[in-house]
Length: 600
Ligand SMILES: Cc1ncc(C[n+]2csc(CCOP(=O)(O)OP(=O)(O)O)c2C)c(N)n1
Image 1: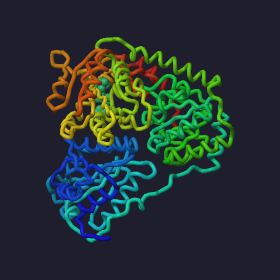
Image 2: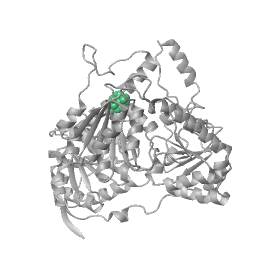
Image 3: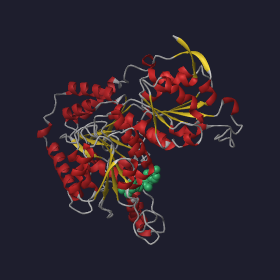
Image 4: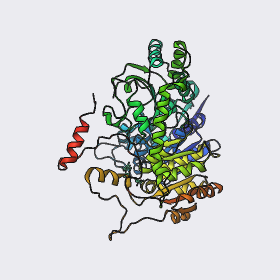
């Protein structure tokens, strides 16, 4: 059925028809028509405000990571639009879906220097700003094109490897009307999942079944395609250890007997030991980035070859990118794992893996790693160590609680010392490693699951990049909990500087006289209208968390934590961070290590 609708109304009705519950952003004259049209459908589509547009995209990204369903983010023209670039980059690198709509210059005014237009290098080219951070971009130049653009945007965002989509919306296109039909979104997306080549799947199944030390590397793709059950079933059938990348954390319950924790630089010793000594490695939905591959230094995280790699990914461009494959399977992770599972069942019965020497070795390595972690996780130090905070927090939360984190020591500590038990419960800006993600992503997850516990775990630096969103949590009265682990500085960076250079700069938060500086986050949170507490000892964590969760609205716990270097995240792998030539000894060691990298 056709109707005469403005461009903005087409978008509003399309979002409603596609089942999008929230449009998040900051209005301005560049999107006035859009936000006004949202009012027509406000029963189904709620417009939410944030205090910085970066947060609109992180919030939508957090919602998608928690649910697999996208939200829309919107901005005005100019600065509102450019404020979102880090959000889009974060979503793009981690293959998360967000629909970002930016207001833009009237089509007939391009190049005439309208307010907030960037016109000097060329007339408005907002799409160019977003080009490297979008899976696909659309520039709507006519109202008539919008129904097509909208169903293509949803198709692109959600099919294959998900990703954020950017839609640039000139103001006149939002305002003018045409006779159009709102698309039927269900009929514009693929219904089936991409299956792997059958012959190659059987070859891979045999290789995996006959392996003596099989390891499965679960990446974010496993979680994106909801393939956790199939992953555990395959691991159990062949007795494979399962290691996880940053985005893969949660793909297997971390108390599963075959879970062997993370791989890479700030991950686990047992994960690296098992992955680097595997005879067959099945990697699913992972990119083999430097951070989870110890910068490709042979023998640290992986030893490929001689380890035989089966790589299953929906994006053919990932196959063979960083490691040569024995078998490359192009498929959706769930479909690929289902087919592999069928195929291994044809190869042989489920192995009695718990009686094997390999299983004993997995358990021994896990126990050793647990002992290493225990050093900080079980420490009674005061102020409390970050790892101990994680242990206490975990004990106070329900099994399905969702935790978010952004760049810094907290992110690594959550990865190592906060076990999660299901997919979509650990949301982190891992790939782009953005600070500022924690707070808005936690708000997005809490919106998705009003009845579940959601905790944003932030360092003080990470928190200060988007802490203004406490206002949003307070206005909408969301029961989200922010844990701010305050060590008065960019201490992860301080650690890296000390390690590489033996001296540091602009990493401690200090006054001119050298004394430590810190805002009082507890008082700031109260001023925003949150329930807030300030603690510093291990014994205080659980009671504080329980008190915070007993309140109905948002809460914050500021934890003054140990700021001693080397007592944060345990370094587990290797990372190629170039050392300047003037540091001769350090440089010589670095070069020797770098020579062991396999890049090709
Ligand atoms: C937006 C952004 N800017 C800079 C960085 C580089 N960076 C990574 S971690 C970090 C410090 C994080 O500080 P904080 O949140 O206080 O955590 P800490 O490491 O001190 O525990 C910085 C500056 C980044 N990842 N993202």
